[in-house]
Amino acid sequence: GENVEQHPSTLSVQEGDSAVIKCTYSDSASNYFPWYKQELGKRPQLIIDIRSNVGEKKDQRIAVTLNKTAKHFSLHITETQPEDSAVYFCAATLPGYSSASKIIFGSGTRLSIRP
Amino acid sequence: DVKVTQSSRYLVKRTGEKVFLECVQDMDHENMFWYRQDPGLGLRLIYFSYDVKMKEKGDIPEGYSVSREKKERFSLILESASTNQTSMYLCASSFRTGVDGYTFGSGTRLTVV
Image (cartoon, rainbow over all chains, first blue to last red; front, side, top):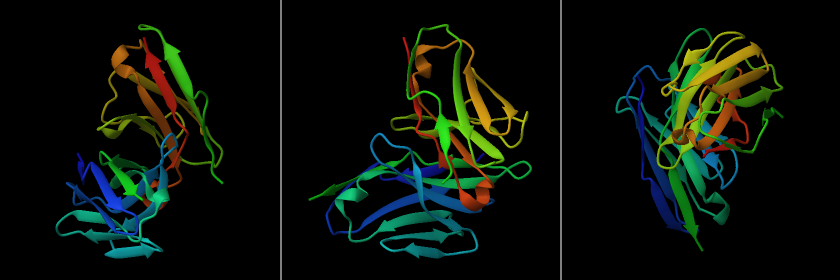
């Protein structure tokens, strides 16, 4: 089945600098790659996603890139701010039965922004 | 705004008890999921359902079962709770997962003593 690996497990950056989180997936059939942010004590929330027919997507200070050949995708956060501190999960969707697809998550990256 | 509601925020149960975790969504989503979240292990899929009365095993179904009698409700059942099932349990739903991702509930932190 699908396996998603995420690195690094922890990341500390100076406020205002950029942060990059990288993921790899194993199944070339995966076609949808969402990123979730989980603040302390809260539920994971979708922050950005990318589909396999697109190489890059941006939304203000965050961007995702996808390299289908290498089966890599990355989250880039620019001009980091204290509110970016959270655990970030990458994920990949393996097509499933009927209209369902089950999302397989990476193990998470704890991002800390230093003032 | 889609709401996924989990009935309990915190639960403490004894070893061997039968435990029910309830999840309700209000947006007519087809798909519902149960994950457990443990430090360093991320989110691991226990069971999912893509239709009423349908269920599929995820990656770690052992010791769990599920029930989906109505479209809006997906229940996770621990048949005989054990201490290694102490965890944060997250329910999620989606209309079409490959299109719009998940909406998560707030989670239930279960402690088995």
